[in-house]
Image 1 (cartoon, rainbow, N blue to C red):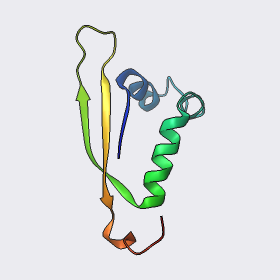
Image 2: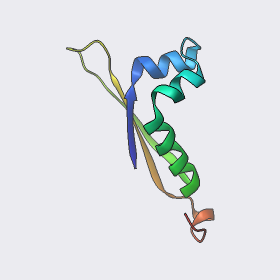
Image 3: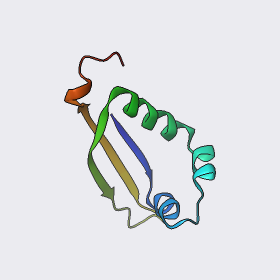
Image 4: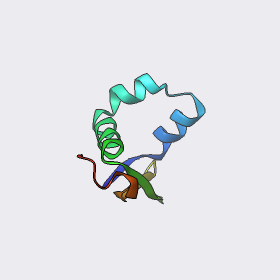
Length: 76
């Protein structure tokens, strides 16, 4: 499973200029994907930044690995 979000948005969330409430309101799809990964016991396995020199923002790609071994026999 992979998700993609704006680097400036992530930076704003981390530095407090974007509140968690505003982030979740504006990115319901990411909230759903993150919750699904949590329920399935998937951990972040890779984070990459896609540089977009011709645009005003870059992208963050977050990839989730397979189910955590301790969660293999649980129902998703």
